[in-house]
Length: 593
Image 1 (spheres, rainbow, N blue to C red):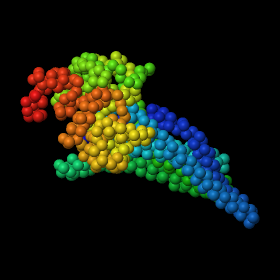
Image 2: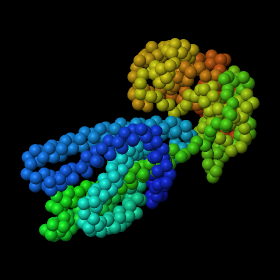
Image 3: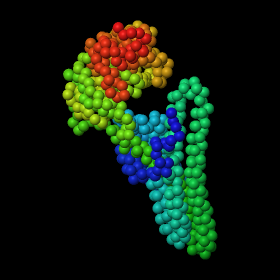
Image 4: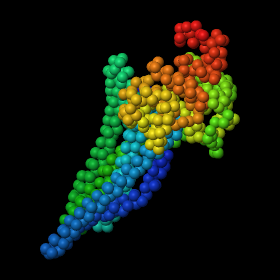
């Protein structure tokens, strides 16, 4: 279960790789450049309308009112109202375009992440628990949404607004504009300090959010176990500890952001005081007009609005880059096992499968799981593998499916080295009934088709008939709905469905990894009868603890401590009186016959 280690085992003070993350984010935006171009058009229009209002107000004060012309005043006020309407309309169209573009980017990113993770190998999933991967796809991508829908375009608008505002103010009064500019170095200094100190905090917050998501996923999946052993309080206490850690970290980050924001906000009244104090004196001396003074006061908010939003931009950018950094770490991960440049494709097994002097261990410092294992499985024959738990039986199937690569030795299919055979081709030819059964939410029929509606119902019915389980499915309708992970079925029922699912695909080679360990004696007899027929039709590898399921196998390997200790038929191994014979006596409590 989830422990106290840090998220992903990473350094909690890990820095964001801004360069790599920016490259990834810009790559996500590139396909939507047309959408951003339209957004920038509406943004430019709305910014122009926004900046035009103070100029119209200046004209009203300096020209329209002194002219004492009601017609001119009405026309200019109408222009001010129309300008406000155009600003609202262009701003609405801008937001709608950004929402559509942002949603498309996030949808494409989620698809890309899922496709990428589906191609990764099993060691990756041992390193990243399901809960944290879910947080990557859901929580981290949601953090990027604000970046794509608001921040990216808004930063451009703020830059444009600041530059144009500053230019207009400089045009009407150079002295007053230069006087106000004296506060900008202070803004840059505060921003630099905040950016430097907040980076690690935002990364830590994202990691802890992912850790909480992972914790909840893992413990909710184990709810029956927790309740059976009265461990609900323990789980709640651990979650409280992680939440407290996230609360404290996020509080520090938010505190820094508030201090930064208040420091920037303080500059606005300071600037207005400068305008009213110094500019007011110039107005009295008639150096500048009252309208210019009002224009500066109206523009001061527009000048500092981008500066005020700087704290929000920095916060969103920090959070988004922290999330993007974590997503990039997933996307840069490459599967350990990939196809060679020109892989071989197998359409059928002509000769058989061979393991030749295979050695395997799961880590460089781990003990050998398989030691110099060699055997041959001719086409149309069956091979059973038995032995104690942890002896290396399942590792044989892991290697055959290219979930892992052996350190030494060769695995051949029809004389072709396994690394030269394409993954899709290999896994299309070989079917697996695994001991860890997963059923998808949906009907039994949908699960028997592996949720692939392109498979006709007739293939399912043929598989049921072949395995001889018509009576079972009379009591379990194919339209019965299965909830997540099949919790509304017994372990034996799930194993029967899993077995028929493998038969439905009609693959030439079938691997059964403890496929009958939870089946009742009646169903076991049905399946054993069906397996005897299948042994005559398919090439099979059967891994089992229950020796009754493998009596009719053409060859039996007894693997212990990673080595093949005995091999032969059921009768031959019993006659030897070795380890297999002892297993038989222990299991059936009788003398072998």
